[in-house]
Structure formats: C-alpha cells, structure tokens
Image 1 (spheres, helix red, strand yellow):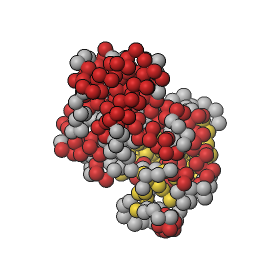
Image 2 (cartoon, one colour; image 1 turned 90 degrees about the horizontal axis):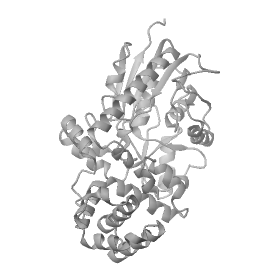
Image 3 (tube, one colour; image 1 turned 120 degrees about the vertical axis):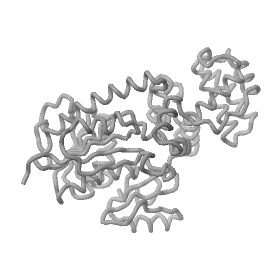
Image 4 (cartoon, helix red, strand yellow; image 1 turned 90 degrees about the vertical axis):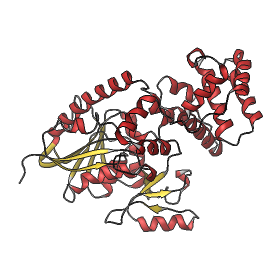
Length: 404
C-alpha cells in the first residue's frame, strides 16, 4: 500500500511509518523491500514489460506494484522463488485485484531477471548528471542504489559515545578530521532507539553533509550569537547549532513538521525557541526580529538525498516536468532568501543551503543576492567522492553589509 501511495506522489517514509508492521524485524523487512523496489524500479519495470509483452501503462497501478515487489524479491533477496510468486498472487486478493492473479503468475514465470547494471534513475537525471560529472555520475547512482549509511551526531562527548558503542559490541567511526566539535559517527544499521545513549539524549541522527551546512554558519559567528533556523524541520541543524552554544530560534511553516524537532530537542536537552512561521508572508511575534546569523535551508527538490529517499528520483521523470519543477522551486527559493536577508543584523551572517544536486536551486539562486560570499559547502559528486556515502548539499555563507 505504501508503494501504491508513492505512485501518486506520497512520501514513502510517511506511508511506511503508518503502514509498516510494528514488530521490529517485520518492520525492517517492509522498509528494505519498499526502498529497494524504488531504487531498482527501472530494471524491475523493464523485466515486467518483457514478461507481460505489453506497455507498463496498460497495467493496473496496484498490479505493477505487486509485480515490482515480487521481482525484487526474486532478484535481490533470498526469498525462495515459489514463496515470492505465492505471496504476489495472494497480494492480488488483498488489494482487490484478484482478477489479475493469473496474469501476475504468468508474468513472474516469464519475465527475465532484472538487469542490475541499469542506473536506477530516470533518463532525464542520468543524462543531466553524466553531462556534468562524467564517470562520477555513475559512481553516485551506484552508491544511491545501496542502503543509506547511518550517521549519528554526538551531543558533546564524541570519544565517550564511541566507547559506549564499543562496550555494546558495535563500532562507531568518527567521520572527518578531529577538531573542536564532535564529529558525525558512522554506525552499523540498526534500530536507533536501541543504541547506547539514545534514551540519555547523547546523540541524534544527521548526515555529515547537513552537519557541514550547520558548521558553515557557526564558523562565521561569535560565541553565543543569536541564530534563526528559518526552515528548521526536521531539526538536525538546529540541534547542532544549539549544541555549539548558540541561542537558536527554530521555525517552520507547518506545525506538524516541528513536532519531531521538539521531541528530539527535549531528548537531547537542547534549548530552542520553536515557533510556526511562514517566511514567505511573515506576520506575528518574531516576524521583525533580527539575528546575528540566519540559516535558510530552503525547501527544494531533495535530489541530493535520493539515497535515503529513493521515491524522489521518480517524481519528475521527464525533462519537461523536471525543468518546470526546478524553475518553480528557484522562484520560491529566491523569494525566501531575499525575505530572510532582512532578518540579519548589519555585519551578520546568512547561509543559503539546499540538499540538491541541481545548480538551478543552488548557485543560480545564491547569485541573486549581491552580498559577498565568504565560504561554501559542496558535497555533490563534483567535489566529494560518492563512495563516502554523504548526501549532496550545497551552501553559501554571505556577510551582511554594515556592522563595526
């Protein structure tokens, strides 16, 4: 059901959170199956077309999803063939498409094995990335077709948290060079709430690229500065900035998106001033406040996070849809950037960031601001080896005019 909802634009993580089984083992299997199907959708669809000898568009959406799941199990898991076929046929009845059971059975018996060498992305993204990055594009897509690595950010004691993991028989490996701040830790996949230190609030989940964006702002500010994280949900950057001693105001346009942030802040003991604010039309308390630093982590395509969110890659799968989508986003992003520059004190710092691979959302929007750029972060494949496993983010730190 989650994959069917994703076909019509729903976010797969939201659907799985509601629909996946509650038992931890079964829940993990459901997540792995759904995300795996999305990562390998092009190969699965090619096999379906070959086995069905008809266009994919002529197959009922629920039946397409059943076939994708079964073919994924047959090709990429240890599920016995007879079990995968039997489960698929049974699923036709559960999804009220029982009339398609003979068709499903026939396709699964006639379809060739899905080709694991296919990119796992729509052609529009494959051609864009290969033109821009060359061989690194294929390395990036290959990395994005593997389960995403898990990273934790220590609240304060990096070495102590590593020792706690070691005592529990787990390996936590710091990412990057040692410094004055706790580094992200690469840890084995697992149930985060069961990791040592979770209940005590000693860490939160956050990708190293996102940490770099928060640190880009921190590097431009004096100790104890006031910070606005304007598009804060789900909140990792706000937690990072608060842990570094800044006075953080965290806002988002939707109250429901701030719930997780507030829960994590309470767990790790972070002091945040959290409120709902739509910065495209700001009004009410706080709308006119000024800050030493402002972080604009703008809503974007999310294409830099396709390893974690594989449904994103299929949302705009034609050149016309993708280009139109990026143009519309860039207009909104530029408007947000120019609205929020007004909230920066003279001589203060503004960081504009997106978790996107596409220059229309990154440097093109950043160029609309005339302030000088002091520093940047770029974790796209143009700069960072995709094998390292970090998401693709770009960020620009500007210095506001004025000040002493």
